[in-house]
Length: 299
Length: 287
Image (cartoon, rainbow over all chains, first blue to last red; front, side):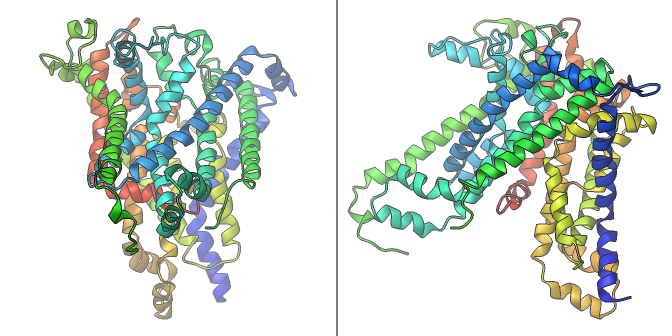
C-alpha cells in the first residue's frame, strides 16, 4: 500500500469517532426532525403526516411569537452588553499591579460556576425581601424594581445575571490585548495620544477578531437561553403555568422544551426546531458577512 | 527599552495615583460587584429562618446556622445526587479525553487528502445550536430504551466535541514533525506512534480538555432534565429543585446546597488555575 493510501486510511481511522458522531448525533437528528416536522406525533405510536400544517400553525401561534420576541429581545441586549462588559473587564485585568492575578481569578471564576446554581443565587440575591441588591439600591436612593416578579424587568435581570459570566470572554480579550506590540502604544503616547485615544485607535481595531468571536458565541448562547428562565420559573412565586410572570421568560428553547416534553407535541416541536436552525445559521452567516467591513486581521 | 527624558520630569504623585492607586480602586470595586452574589449565597446559607425574614436583611449572620448544611444534605437525597453528578462527570470526562485526543491526532499528525476541509466542517458544527438536535435525539434514544439511563449523557461524549478537538489539535500542530517521522522510519505503526511518542507529550492539552469537560458535565442542566425522569438518577443540577415544597422554597437550605454544588468547581479552579487560562486563550487567538 502506498504511503498516501495508508495515511488516508489511518487519518480516517483516527477521526472515525467524530465521523460517526457527526453523522449519528448531528446530521441524522437534524434530518430526522425535518421529517418529523411534517407530522403529528406524541412520542408514541405512528407518525401521522400533516403536510406543512405545523408550519402554518406556527405563524398563528401567539406563544411562538412571544417566545421569538423574548429571545430576540434578550439576545439583542445581552450580546452588545456582554461584549462591552468583557472588554471593560479585560482592560481592568490588564492593569500592571502586583496582585493582578488575584483580581483576574475573582473576575473569571463566576464564569465557570454552574448556571443552575447561579440562577438560584440570583433569585435570592434580587429578592425584594431577602436579597442584597434591592436593599443596597434603596440605601443609595435608587428605587429597586421587582427584578423577577415584574414582567417588564425579568429579561433585563437575566441580561445582568449573564454578565457574571463575562470573565471567560474577558480572558480572551485580555490575550488579544496582550498580543498587541507594546511599541505601538509607546509611539502613540509620544505623539501625545491619551488613554482613550490609544484605546480607540490601537486596541479596539486590533481586537476586532475577538469581538467577532464573542459576538458569534454570544449570539449562539443568546438564542439558546433556557436554564435561567426555567429555574426562576421553578422557584415559582409566579406559578408554573407561565414561564416567568406573563410568560416574560418564555424563551424559544423553553417553548421547544414545553412543546416536546410537557405537551408531547413532537411534530410541532420539530417544526420549532427547524425554524431555530435556519434562523441561527442565517444570523451567523449574516454576522460573518457584516464583519468583513469592521474586522481587521493584520497588525 | 526607551530611556526618554519624558517620565522623569513628571511629578511623582501623578503616576503614583494613576498607575498604582486608581487601578486598584477600580479593580477592587469590580471584584466586590462580582463577589457580592456569592457572598450573599454563603451569608444566606448561614441564616436561621428568623434572620432570613428580618428586614432590613442582615449582612452578617449571627450566630452562624451551620446546621443548615446538615439539614440541606438530609432534606434531599444529596449524597445520591452528588454521586450521580460524579458518575456523569467522570463518564463525560473520560469520553472527551479519549475521543478528542484520537480525533485531534488524525486531524494534525497524519497528512491525508481532505483533512483540512473535514476539519473546517468539524469546527463549523459549533454553530449548530445544541437544542436543534434535542427533539429528534430524545425520540431516537427513546426507541433505543436509553431514556432514564446515563447513556444519552455519556455515550455522545465518546464521539468528539469541536472545541476540544480544536484545542488539542492546536497543541499538536506545535509538536515537531520529525518526532513522528523518526518513529515511522523505525517502522512503528501509526497507533504506536500515537500511544508511545505523541500521547506522553499531549498531557498538558489533555489536562485542559479534561478540566473543561468535567466542569461542563458538572454544570449541565438541560440534558439531564430531559433524559432523566427517575429521582434516583438525578444529578445535583436537577436535584436542587427539591427544595421547593408545596409553594414555598426553603431559601436558606437551597443556598447551603448551592454552596456545596459550587464548591467543587471553585476547588478545581484553585488547583488547576493555569490550565483554565490556557484553555480559554488557546482557542482565542485566530479563533
